[in-house]
Amino acid sequence: MTDIVNWGILGASNFALKSMAPAIHAAPRGRFAALATRDPDRAAPFSAFAPDLRVHASYDALIADPQIDAVYIPLPNTLHVDWTLKAIAAGKHVLCEKPLAMAATEFDPVIAARDASSLVVAEAFMIVHHPQWHHTRDLIRDGAIGALVRAEAAFAYDNRDGANIRNRPETGGGSLPDIGVYTIGGVRFATGQESEAAEHVHIRRENEVDVYAEATLRFPEFRLHSLTSMRMFPRQEVVFHGEEGLIRLTAPFNPGSYGDAAVELVKAGQVTQTTRFTAARQYEAQVEAFNAACLDGTAFPCPLEFSRGTQAALDMILAAEGSA
Image 1 (cartoon, rainbow, N blue to C red):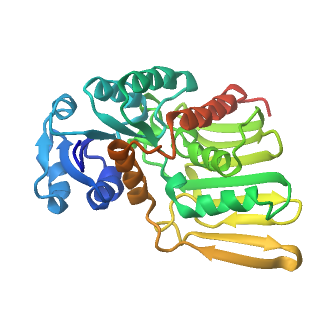
Image 2: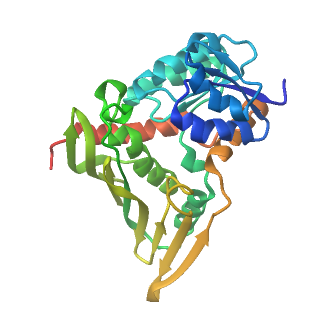
C-alpha cells in the first residue's frame, strides 16, 4: 500500500480552482496529480501551484490513468451519479460534490457499487469536518440549552446569471440542491435526528429552478425552519433554540469567505459564551479525512448513508411543494 493518495479532478471548475484543488494540494498524505480539461488555458492556473500536474483531454482518460488513486468530481449535479459510478468501475476512490444525487433513491446504486468495490466513496459535505459543528453537536448532546424546541437555518446569496449551472434546470440547479443540503444536513449532523415530514413549504421558481425555498421540517423532538435563496442579500446563520438557552453559528457554512467561525451559547440573563474557530480549514480537513480513509481504513465522517438522509429530507420538501 502506498503512503500517499494521488488525486485527479474531473473538470476545471472555478470552485475546484479556488477551494478543492488547493485543499487537495495542501492536505497531508495527498497529491494533486491530474486534471481533466480540454482547454489548456483553464488548466494553467491549476498548474501554477501544482507544476507536475498531468492534464488529460477527457474525463475518461483521467479515470483510466493507472497513477490516479482518487477522483474529485465537481461537475454539474445531474452528472454526479454517472461519473461516480464510472470512477468506481475504474477502481478509483471518489469524493463527489454535493448533491451527489438528485433524489434519495439515486444513492442506492452508488452505495451498492461502493460496497462491492471496498473503495472510499463519499459526498463532499465539508461542514461536518469543521470543529464548530462538532462543538455545536457536543453542546446539544450535553444539554447546554436544555431540550431543543426549534432550529432555524438560513443560507442566501444573490446569483442572477442565467448561464450559471445553479440557474439551469438541465444541470440540476436550484437553491435546494445547492445549499439546502447545508441548512438541513447541518442540523441533522448536530442533532443526530432524522426529519419525519415537511410542513409549510413555499417555493418560488424562475426558469423551472427554485430560487427561494422556505420550509418547516418536523423532527422527533423539534422543528427546523429552513430558508434558502439565490436571490437575496447574502446571509448564513443557524440557531438552535432550547428551553434553557440557544446556540448561534454566525458563519456556519463558508467560514472565512463569509466571516469568522464562531459558536455563541446564550444562557439565562443574556450571558453569552463565544467560541471562535479562526484557524480551522474545513476543505483541507475533509481531504485529510478522506486520505486517512483510503490509506488507513478509518471511517470517513460523512458516509453516503448520511448524505442520502439529507436528500430524503429535500425530497420531502419538494413533494410537499405548494402545500402552504
